[in-house]
Image (tube, rainbow, N blue to C red; front, top):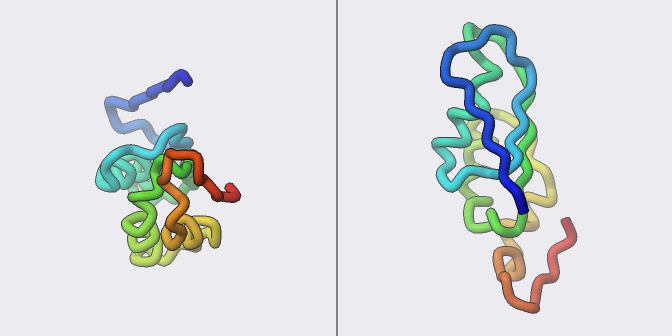
Length: 96
């Protein structure tokens, strides 16, 4: 798998969409990334690929979304509650 990183090093006006191809290891970094869409009171949309490899961060992301009054995808709730997500062995039973 290849990872592509694109960083914006200065404030760029009028960013409406941010796409995270990988969910960062720290939720704080996620907040920083998606914050690019909200400069100067503007609004935007952030899409993030969140996989079973990120399952250990599901609860923290859910809380962040709730605190921000954002919708939480049902599959994210399921991931946070399932013992199978995050298991990299042969017992993976996720349905993403």
